[in-house]
Length: 255
Image (cartoon, rainbow, N blue to C red; front, side, top):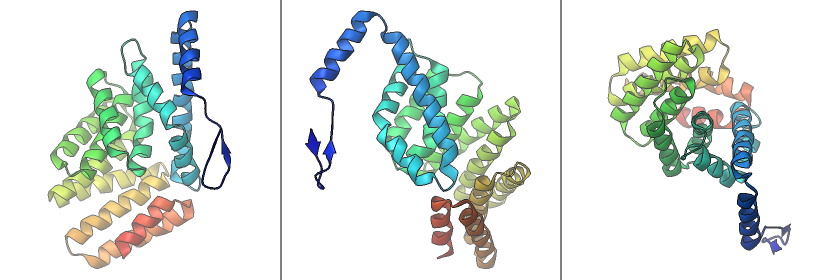
């Protein structure tokens, strides 16, 4: 038994007990079956929680994944390793990329994203999602050429698969990379295309992020009024969604 600063009991499994249980499981011959079930459970959890990340449950979603981070790491290590399930590994990596981005697990995120891409070259939606997650992270880390390359590959793959929703997000990330590289007209065109697709599919979260990128592009052009209009629209959408991250971003840019 351990206690925290408020003297609330917190029970932890002793490492020796964990190691003994693991040893017995290996001896039983059921290790592979249970690892697969473990990975399947946490893939389902990650994908369900990802859907909840774009609204009022955002904080609870982040906290839940943070609590289960070690289990998620174990599922990733098995699924992306020798004898694992590559499809599960790709889907899990893609589902967690937004969580890692928001909680600033950037170094760890990069490690898993690169590992997933290195281990699979299949033309699947799961790979396209990992590519766009890696492109988004590369943009954040200032590697704009890398971000552009990854986002273009993701977009091409989504288009080949006929996945309009995935393609819209890939265009958004690619457009942002182009704006940051100074290719503002090309970048704005891509973002406007993604915005149109988000509107067609009533993806309010996507609409808000596209408006933010368009506002940022307007700022680069010293179009203060145009930027302000986009940020105010984004703020309204995010408040309706109860999207704390989007509200914060919109207010930041307005400021």
